[in-house]
Image (tube, rainbow, N blue to C red; front, side):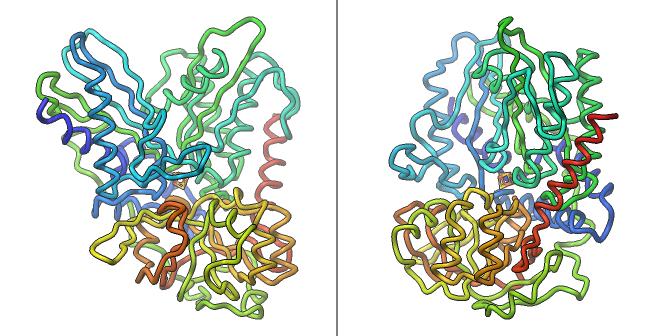
Length: 505
Ligand code: SF4
């Protein structure tokens, strides 16, 4: 199959850089529905620009290119071992080209394999079928939304909703709860794939498989179609909004399957995917490996531009900040302020935070801006280039951040999804702020990086290293200030009350 390798690289590249039309349409509706000039609409405008930029430059839509999950159907006679080898080689090559971030780490040592390969990575499922062609579908689902997957074992008591029984009403409560608990941490607006029934392991698999349905299809089971419609309506009345900023659009898709179960078990498994819902597929000629057809795409329909204007609509009320920051500067900020940050910032996520618990930082961090980001970087000669650089989910650093703020004098943390009570107290005590950037807007923010000034801790792997980036006019919203205020707590409380109201309705 002389064209197989290039066909698979094309599939990975297109999946990583160009959202399918049904997701584009849903995000277009979200932009049109959201109230203009709100934080949620600003977030959606940045997302729309980011989608255009990724398509235009064939760059990763989000820096977290996720766990590649391939679903392969082959006719009788195709060697599946050869196919598996070809998929692994394509993943390696797409990583080398910067279309996938090196995302695969040894679970015991934390060492990044550097090429997205390793035990059980990529995830590949094979099935035989009676058609003549090969079909390969691919889902790239990042860690932020993967962490918001949730499984319920009914009956259960749910926050704000009370008891969920073993019936469709109980399932409805679980699905509303699933959207609510994700808040902005899974980069809302998201979509959920759901499995009612099965066992724990297969239930999650069936739920994930629902993400291969198009967002605009109609469930052939009228009971499930009704449930999907109700959830779309009710979840979008919760008010979580884009990035959890509060707003009208929290969910762009709900796809439900029912599987048989054991009489003793009743699981509801939910796979939460973010707005950067990267899913595509191809049909391949079984003798040459050439692409005969793209799935999820209409070859007659050209890719439409998403954004009405480019980037972030400035109002003139934005506050310009230049690092290093003073305590006075950050104490003057309050929740809701939009800031444009310039100067040097340092990236740091899970491994850097862990490192800082036991070691002094490799740089002076007093007054620093710490960016929760695991970028896609490529080396060209001796110089590093930023290929994608959006924020990662900050809540993972909650156990460490207060210590980092106290010990090292960091004045601003940029991330997404917000942080918890311990960090909020530290922001107040030591004089610092949390700035929410727009999750997944990896191309948009990569353009705010003017230069890579250096790197430390590269031995932790490219995404986990501490990169020194010179940024310019990096747009973010103050969502936790130095006075104890948190937009995230406010939205969680408000949407919890709305959840309770849906229970009574
Ligand atoms: S958009 Fe957000 S949740 Fe989705 S992969 Fe990117 S960072 Fe993760």
